[in-house]
Length: 344
Ligand code: 1HN
Image 1 (spheres, rainbow, N blue to C red):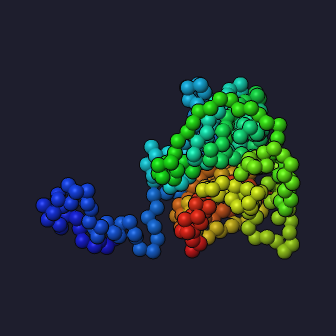
Image 2: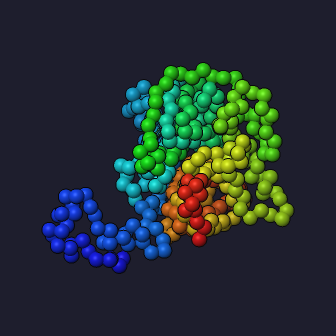
Image 3: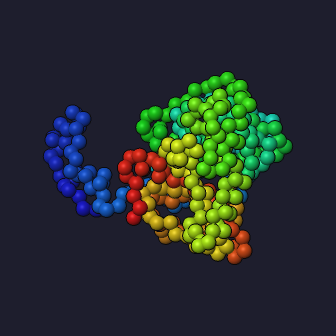
């Protein structure tokens, strides 16, 4: 990249004087922070195979007792950011969490927003803001900023889910912290179950109607059914995609990251245009390939990959008979709020 004068070309004495006063000349670094036309991205296209994570996560079940670990998680880290930073992208954190039968992960709350995408196993629940939410495969459960949450397991088999947080950006802003709490009282509200169909909302007679986040669980059965209805439309809808939204506002379910479910018809290829946010793809059902710039990944059920922003992504269903279903995450709500969202 073209430089605007080099630091080394300045007199040594001058540089030392600047340093002493905590001053830095901009011109040698200007092109670095404002590259021409397209941002420099540390986020690399990376793929994580569930079949390889699973045995290591189960081994962590022996190595890390839940009381000591608090949350038993293997983080899906993007080496482009430095693996120790525990980031998938600049704003997205991903982790696979294991809860064993009988275990309890104590109540806490924190500033980063979280969601869980349930990957495997029955019988676990998470209680968020007093709402006890059962976890079934494919369900999306929200833990928005500041809400108390705890996990428990009343079933027989290990339960595994994908955690998605905006931790990297909240940490970068120096706003990340947590509080420990006591076990929550479960309210009988089952508020999330009241939000069943788009277009109608329960008229506010319930005691928690003041909650900013009335819907905390999006059952996979319902989301899948919505995609199936879209798939039957005539004329056909090209991109079978739904956005997880807050039913009170119609806006994205959380403030920073966006969550979506996509259906690919048998043999369908779908190209998503280059957009400014980084994105994550996680297979709920089916076998797909994901092309990201020069990389191509083959994803089976529960596999996950991520793509940098400003890069087109092509999704392809490998089956000629079965649809494929994909959970997608991006940083679009953040980019829109900041005014930097772009489609190229
Ligand atoms: C957290 O609170 C959970 O509550 C999971 O299950 C993963 C990663 C970073 C920070 C907080 C949870 C997390 C986390």
